[in-house]
Length: 149
Image 1 (tube, rainbow, N blue to C red):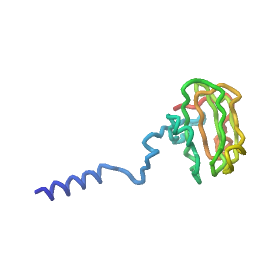
Image 2: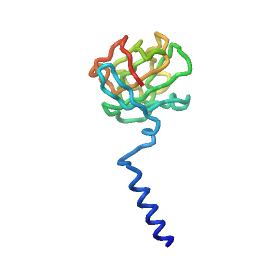
Image 3: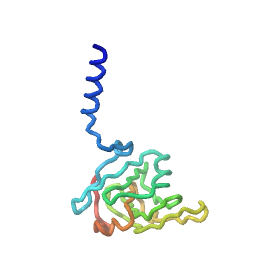
Image 4: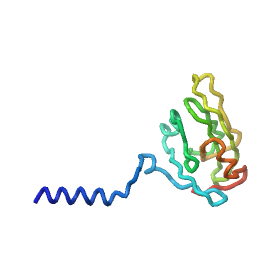
């Protein structure tokens, strides 16, 4: 009897999972809708540790994926590419989720901390979206556009 219950429970667990290749970051991801209606699935970076780590050491970012950073208050937030391995488009947004600045094809900086320049931070922003390099232009994103998430 207990083997039957165990087998049934395992079968239900596997059937109910519906997971093809779910990853941990998928659980804290959200959909970002662009002005043209296209959707990007973005990992949500909510904690200081998440924000610090960001895209460090990642060797790729799919065209329909991104990373969305949430800051605690509007500020002139600069980003850098320390230990990033791929170019990124960095999109700063204000509290209304309106784009205030874009750094396109921001180059990676695998070098030491002192050698990595900073980008952006010219306008107050509350949110920052990172996309694979070149995707902001491909999606037609521009300053003044509003994203939904």
